[in-house]
Structures are given as C-alpha cells and as structure tokens.
Length: 426
Ligand code: PMP
Image (cartoon, protein in one colour):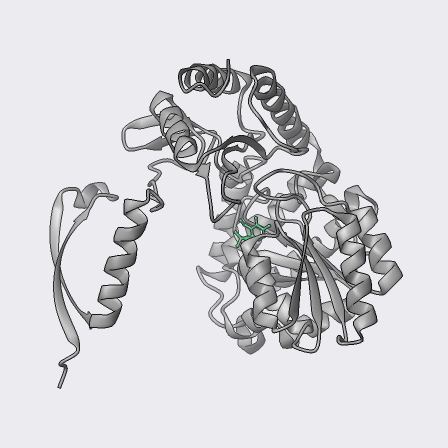
C-alpha cells in the first residue's frame, strides 16, 4: 500500500545542451509526501526572500572571459588564479595520464585504486610543501572531512576561527570534538580560549584550525602568532591553505611564506583553485600521512582522483616550480585591480591577497550590484548571508594571471559606471 506517496508531473525544459534545446520531457515523480511538502515550501520561501541562488551555465571554459547564454563577460569569479585550468600543458598531461591509466582509477585507493600516478603526485606535493609526506583526496572539502575526524574525537577540543570555511566547520562537527569559536584573527581571544581549554583539564588533545587565506575577505591568517600560542599550549596546528597555495610564498603557500613548514602539523591544500584541476591534499609528517591512510574515511571509502586529474596536478606543480612567471603576473593583476577599486572609493575591506571583495553591506543592494555588473559585462558574484555575516554582503573579485590589463581596465570602467549609478561611490 503506498498511501503516503504522491505523483507529481514535471515538465523539464533542458536548456543547457544545444542538442536538447527547447525539448520538453515529462518526468513522473513518485516520492514521499512529507519530503515533497518540505521541498516545495522551503524553495518557495527562499525564492520569496531573494535568497535562491540561480546557477549560471558556462558555455565556455572558465577563463578570464566566459560565455553565459549569448553574452561574453569578463570573469572575476573563478578560483583559477594562475589560469592553469586551460593551460595547454595541463590539458596535454590530462590526456597522457588518461591514455596510460584510463578514465577512472577503478577502485578505492586501499583496495586497488592506488596508481603510480597518485604516488608520484603525493611525492611532488610533499616536496612542494617542504614536508615529509602528503596524501591526496578527491577534493579539498573531502580532505577536511577526512583529516580532522581522523585525529580528533569527542574527548578533544578545536579552536576554530569564526571565518573558517564551511568544509572546516563540517569537518570539525563530524569529529565530535568540542568546537570553541574564536573571534576572527583575534590573537588575544585565541590565547585566552586556549589557556582556558588547557586549564579545564577536560580535553585530551586541542587543535587550532584556520584558513591560511580567508576566502571571503582575502586577509591572511596570523600564522606566526598562532604558532607561538600553539607552542605555549601544545596545540595541534591545522592550516587550510586552499586560497594561499599557488598564490603566497611564490606559490608554495601561506605556511612557507611565513617560514613555518616545520611547525604546522597539517597543511591542507586544494588542487581545484590555483592548481586548476580538482582534488585536495594534506601535507605533513610521515606518521601523520601513514595515519590518514588508515583512518581518513574519504580516502578509505571513496574512489580516488582520476588519473587525468592526478597527471594534470603533477604538471601544475612542474609549471609552478619551473618559473614564477604566472605567480608574478597574478600579483601584478591583483595589485592593479585592488588599487583601481580602492581609488574609485570601493570598500575592499582588509584584503591582502588577490581575493578582493567590494563590500556593499545590504544584501538586496549587493545582489542588484552584481546583476548590474553582469548586464554591463562583468561577472562578479554577490556573496551574502549565510556565506558571510548579515549586513556584510559583497561582490567578490578574483583577478587571475590570465587577465590582460585591457580586461581589467574594462572591468574597472564598468565598476565606475554601476557604482555611481547605484550611489555606492561618488
Ligand atoms: N577550503 C577552503 C578554505 C575553500 O575555500 C574551499 C573551496 N571553496 C575548500 C576548502 C574546498 O575545496 P574543493 O573545492 O577542492 O573541495
């Protein structure tokens, strides 16, 4: 008897693939009534509040200029910092690795999905990060889910910066450890809370965890001070350097930028941003990596990186270690855009890296600003609550090594026009 099921008929208009354009498919959905009601009500609620994120489809690669629909836009929204996602050497490396090892790895690493190319990648990553060893995961998100819970548990505590990335927050929650929220980059608060946690005698291990570069503001974690506090209280140190790797320290990342490679227990990186591919990794001591290989659940229970992704990531590290050209160009472009936006009167907050927010404040105005930029030819996404705190809505700009000065000048001219029209700048 299926008295609690409903049948809903949908007409789906598939519009992302030219071959299917305007073709209507009728799909029957026979699902739970309670789920149907939950989804319908909540989707309508989000839409009525203007909080439903409409995802755009790119018809082009994610380069400095993208095509959405029939429009070409200057792209200031990707994490493709060095332009490596479309670099011909990377594409070639993907093809070569795919030809040699196949499209997929075929299994979880611990069963028989570890290929030579995974080991080669991990050895390269360790060398690049100046650590004894490294372990690759399928994504940066997965990495945080696996690494934190492999060492922390309900007898432990984690001091976590209030602006840490969602994957860190979720990784901490999964571990079951007590999460102690620390005011953003506030070293007095961190020290006080570390002292209190140690003196309470309640915890077996205490970890301090931070982004290397904060993804929505572009400021850099105060790693030298964090390390001092960690040494005073014997805290485990964990830095998620998703936005610092390939960017700071001539590409080697925030930890190396501060000369702290031997002091940070966990260096997390992603292969999806400056490296231009997909995947994540932890670099650290040999014992740490050996432990993660037997305890990090996404490593144990999820199929490994595709050979093509591993091959391309290896090539990215080759490119980064051969020359600082792309890193230099990234910083040149970032400084140019930051200076331009600041001189125009935009509030770029405390950004110290290529991540350049234009903080507008009001959520509706932020979304309208992003929409107007789009109409004029700039793709810069609005970031509002819950991704950032209420009242701190912003449009986030990500200049890359692949942008030309001409593109950045065009973008700045559009910023002036829309900024003035909306009374954001004078
Ligand atoms: N950590 C941080 C700080 C990030 O910004 C991101 C990506 N937004 C991730 C982890 C997740 O990385 P990935 O996209 O490789 O899953």
